[in-house]
Length: 342
Figure 1 (cartoon, helix red, strand yellow):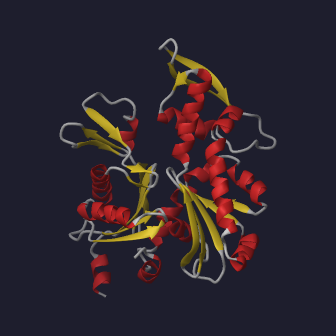
Figure 2 (tube, rainbow, N blue to C red):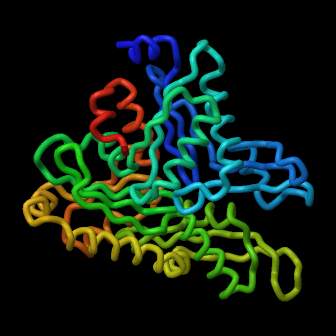
Figure 3 (cartoon, helix red, strand yellow):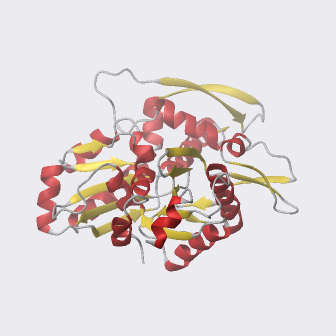
């Protein structure tokens, strides 16, 4: 009862602390913030210069005295201080001191998070002004966010393809029966695109360019009835040292990102092989649901369906699936208690 009273006077928050993007959900307002997980700090005193979208615009363009950091790597905290600054910024931005009480914060984290990493996330949130901190496994949050019947005695399979990790879970009766994760996601695809362009064309491109290539012409398999796309990209010639522009096509990018995609599919196969038979039968009937930004890669659902022989669906608005699921728990404390990581 006391907790409910406190909730009336504070703006409780749900956060999807992602490797690529951080999303914030506020009770009664929905998703209010979706910004890149990037922090720009001064080298001498570690004071933040910019956070989020403004910081991402500075990636690869900073002078010697400031540094751009991605504080989350492979789904976990790589830089504790920078993560603390990032959380402070997002909490202050959406909470805005509208109430005199600190917020309760629920954070979605990868299913493979260790106890040390859990403590780091909780400490960072507490240092950023949170009253209470709860952690929720991201695949569980994604399953709630896309409307899967997690409390029923049926098996539901969710695949959350984020920036740093791919989380796969089979869920039944409010619990994760089996989960498996691979440290492969959208960022790894960007890296393989950069390496491919460097190897094939002796052209050096940055992270933002690689990400744009993936979004514009990236695909997991050929789409029937569609002409292959092409794109002009700019970078620095490694031989002459002079900036230049080249044309690349969809088939080349498909070849470049084939390795991380194969890792994702192999991880899914391993998860299916270890799923109890009764739940596996439910998955045959109900199919697999894809969430996370990586699921937006064109043709990925088609390729997985061909490989596994199962029905594959991409969730509606997959980018916000985790934060919407975490956000639902702001109103349902009983569900929160059942599914929170102890």
